[in-house]
Length: 255
Image 1 (cartoon, rainbow, N blue to C red):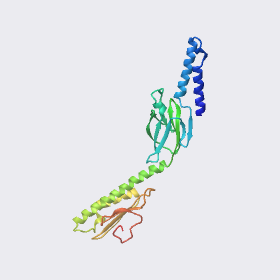
Image 2 (image 1 turned 90 degrees about the vertical axis):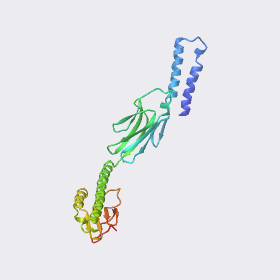
Image 3 (image 1 turned 135 degrees about the horizontal axis):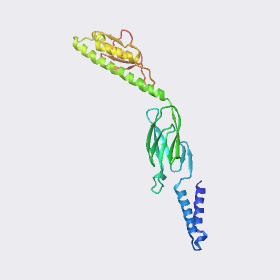
Image 4 (image 1 turned 180 degrees about the horizontal axis):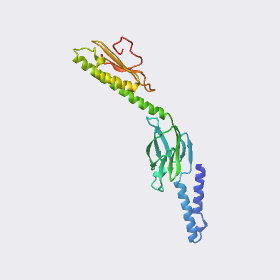
């Protein structure tokens, strides 16, 4: 392709340099012809005709469009650059990035733009100049619904853990107010109110056991692919962590 391109330039050069009009007196028509040939040469130099096919998609020579997947499953960061477009001698044009889902964003000769997809699928993203693609790449978007569900579950589990932390605070206050005893921790009105709040989130009633010197409270967490444990437990030793299994009956610590 480069040899063909060089050949075209050589033909134009010879056409301009050895045109018979250089021997005879120039006419307006001859001058116009030379000007048109020069214009053609300039256009060929300014437009990048060589297309590169690689694993990232179709790219116009000198133009690059790449992407990076963000932390959340449906957001991508697209980086684009067109050295020819940044060339001060290049003709101005309108640039934008088309995300393949009916949405687009204004662009220039280089930069970064983020886009969030709302549906799973494979999308062809194009870097456009004056409506013509000068670079493209394909992106695969999947598990959007799962990601949204995980965010909701994470929020609920965070609330459950926070409520258990409040129970710990209430238990210590009760211990001091009742003559250094935990025997009534499970009966504290605030603790019972938090029990109900947790049940509304997880669908299961938290478990509480107490004695004069010890107490333990644990609650179910909502299942999530991003959670390695099934319950959250707090006790009189200061333990506040996730645990895999229920606390055995009669036990007064998280283990």
